[in-house]
Length: 124
Image: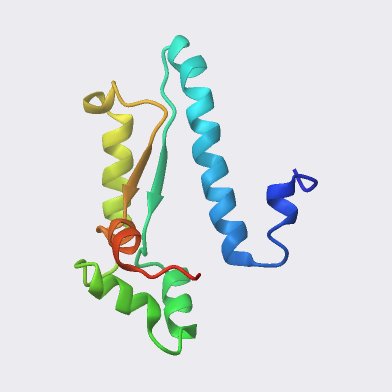
C-alpha cells in the first residue's frame, strides 16, 4: 500500500493519512459485504465523532484555540459523545433490529460531519 499514488501523495500529513485510512476501511467493508452476506453474517463500520475519552481530552487540552469544542458547539451537539452512546450504536448494529444493514458505515457523531460538510470552508 505504501507504493500507491494516493498514499505517497499524502506526504507527512497525519490528518490526510487518517482520512484516507478511514475511507479505505469503509471501501473494504463495502467490498466484503456480499461475501459475508452469503455466509449469513454482516459487516459494517462505526464512525464515532468526538467521544469523551482520555484521548479526546488530551486532544482538546492540546487544542489551544478550542477548535474541537467550537465545532461541537457549532454543529448543535454542544458536547462530546459518550462511550455508552457508541456501545448502544454497536449493540443496535449487532442486534436483530439491524439484520438488513450490511456493508455500510454508521456515523455516530452528533451531526458534526454533516455540519462540517455543509458549513466549513474548504481551501482553494
